[in-house]
Image 1 (tube, one colour):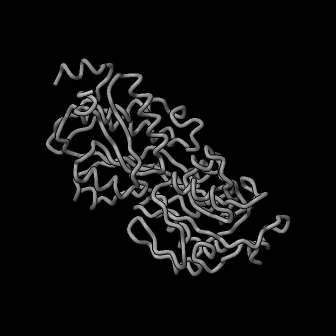
Image 2: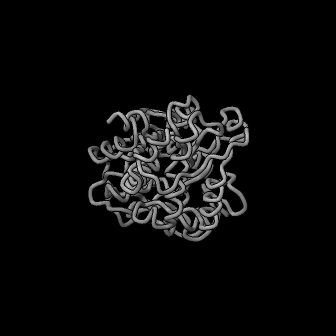
Image 3: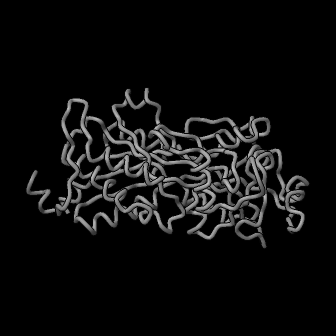
Length: 343
């Protein structure tokens, strides 16, 4: 137990990829015997924790700029890609059955459309029976990359209608009355418990928790349901990481079959780690996960990075050096006892 407490590699941050990272961690512990864990706390908390060096790696859905990375002494790399999905609780409306366009969605979230039988929603759903229920907006109260990306999409796709929604450092100032909860899990629970509710969650929650995600109208073509195929279409349309690991926006892209709210998520590690051994285990964790390729995210609701990007990251992790020139070796084939003996 003392080993687990003193030597456990710990990560924290974004809730968007949390279930995937937790599964990767479980697989890694089984494979190597080395203790490692990930705690979902929101992107803002992840950035703060790795900046304070209170964890071994942080996670954020919002990439840091080169200037911020330099200031905090961090190295950043992407891990996977997923969609953000508006989800609703409306009797008789199943996954993908409610259709919304960007303007109508923005009006809902800005509080200017307040009932589900509003003419604008009915016009998009002529065959649906829509109740006269008040729309209950469920939002994140914690500093969340999911919120940041969702609001960025609304303001990009429908700037006039979304103007009243003010971004606020991982949160947002939503006009009118909302239900604010901490974390994606509580968004899911609140939406499920509240008739007439609408929330926004990562694609894995929409899939795993059997939520009624909406279909959205992209910039080009007909309405699209959230799916791996639609996320992959966004990756192609945006040329994600085609020539470098520089972040690329995947929001509101043109192209057939594109889900319009797609984002990559990122991991942050220190450029100059306090413990080379812990840094080695951290990099080895992601190295092993990337070596699994597409199978590492199969069935999770996320899309893997392009194969060439995965290979590039494996190369970077294999040759990681600190600014002072020290190589951080990626540990392979060691069990917990071997690591303890080497300390």
